[in-house]
Length: 467
Image 1 (cartoon, helix red, strand yellow):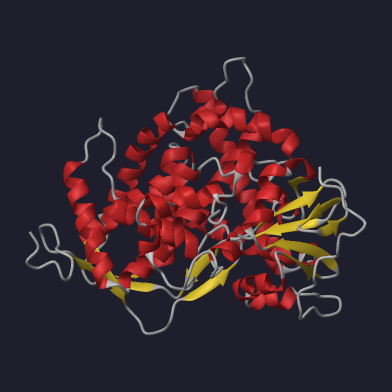
Image 2: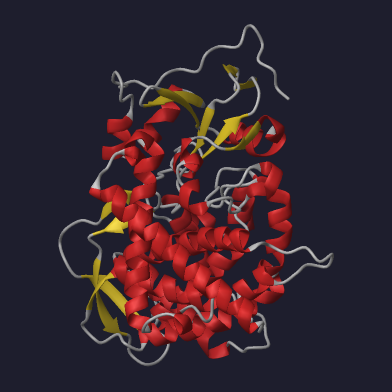
């Protein structure tokens, strides 16, 4: 425990707060720009969500205190969880610490490293099916296409019979994507302006309809699995199984875990795929290197062997998670009066942590706005080392670190390698790609044109004459 000392100072208040609304305007119009301006005022900065104070953690040392060393002083909570828990319930991402240990123990077997190879085989089939519909010269609405691909990967690996108990697969995909999009959009507004969720607005009605629609499909699928009693080799089968002492998740708990993994799996995967394809589309040399690596790996892959190493693509993926972390903010709640960074905080104070802030600090990552996979080359600069130092936290840290981290990274890497081995994507328009800071950081206006790569392994630019 870190009790507040009488000499502890109040945290500095970020400039620009307005009466009643506080910093709501900045969070709605330029959330990432506003957040990255905060470290200039200190490692802990107060902002206002309406009249409600929220304390933003801006440095890795204080992140360590909240997520690791001082965990007993903080719990899941605050507006950034309270208002999305309406549809997530007590899933792993939102439940209080008192429930987390049991839920983590019951869900952990579904993410055992031994299961990931099975999931990769399922994901590979969906990736091949989607890529099989692509044609030379076709222009893709990339984020939308990646949402559909991410949905198919998520469904195939987590809930293999999702489509079997609903309408036609194509209709179900589009309806599910529409529901997910409505929930992701509405969740961010509920985070920063929770009072609006109580108003009789059309957007709130759509949000509630989307929530109930997804709940109904999840409940139907869970009921079908229970009736069938068959192990489908997917994540839902693992969630329904009893552990060694006979404990099991209830139907309500299964729904909450499924909802959490479903929304997180689709959103994170789609955003990371789209952003990576964007950055490669504007860098021909890097694109050629990654394509060469992907083609060589495809020629050596075997089901019973470890997946081939893709070091350049791994650096590219790491850099995408740095510069555009899909899950870009999350919160905690102080459970007792405490001190953080020399500033006193009362019990019940809202704490906001943002991977985006840390990942864009120039003292931690020089030229933070430049996409530079080379910053991850070599063991000394590895992603794992940055995670240990808490300078890179796209999946959180500590005991509440995202349980599906390796699952998500594996699926993203597999999809990118499959795409880039066959297709080169180039910008199809002149309008700049826009960053949309909702619950997930998404690219808007990203249109790319497909070009089938010539047969053979491509040679990166400048490699002529190399032996």
